Image 1 (cartoon, one colour):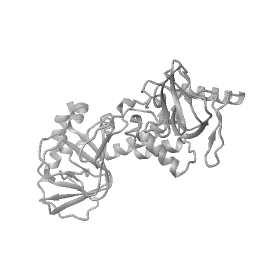
Image 2: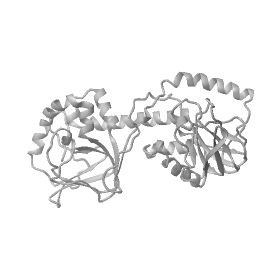
Image 3: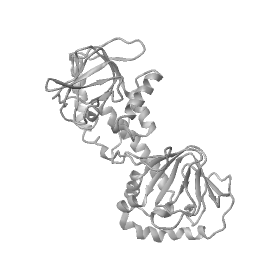
Image 4: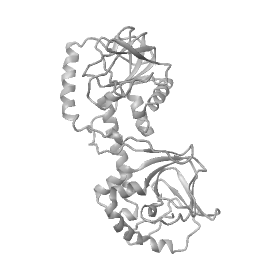
Length: 377
């Protein structure tokens, strides 16, 4: 049984350690003087950073489109400050089997469903092993101090609300996790989770979760801004406007042979290639060019209703960054007329003879003195 989202569950200081030779073990015991000192330092540091570490996780929403093997998802898209320069994500050694099991459990949780693969791997590495004896409360209803998310690797737990068992969390279930909202919010736990048997868990705390997402989000944003800087119609946007567009980009994954755009069709999506390769063809035969990481196509669809000028097909497995016209209009509606005029930069290219540049690593054309690049579709 999956615990309702509002069932915030927390740690109890009486969890016990069980030795396991192939994993790093975390001891959960009554707080001693040394831990009190460490906790004071942590609280002091956290108080300075908690207000700055806010991430708008409401922005993590799924957008699905295309065929079964074309999965589009939104990117974490709120502004977050950079994490401390000296901070590095923790890495707790685990077997490949454990890592894969954690990864599968995380993906089944809606909170993590849209997190990029590289970020997911950092979170998997950061999860720490904990063992809890039977009849011990892992988290307690009403506790205000809990900030950890748990994945049950083995054993079974009872979910208790107001001294009544209302459900269970066990390793064999597809919902073998609890406490995920503790990564986002500082609120009392809504239920107690009690170990029915010896339970082995993997845990992740709120501070690590936020810092991992901050680091990866800032890195991702910088990359996306660099991509947008190469698109001619965006050249006059302010830094803030470009950042707004970058944060609205959605990821779409296509397999080799997938048709992304069809010549003559209408569409309102703009694409940037994050990694991989696509080919642009006309009349099903003529290869106009090949596009690779950093290249873009379909940008005029954001401001015009023109049909697609070429068919675009994935050559290899490819990750695309996508922006649709409706989102673009919502974000930068007042800029559309200006961008329409800016699109005149393309006229030279669209009327120029096309080369059969099959081996071109970059499908770009110099259309003005500053070397802006034009698109094929």
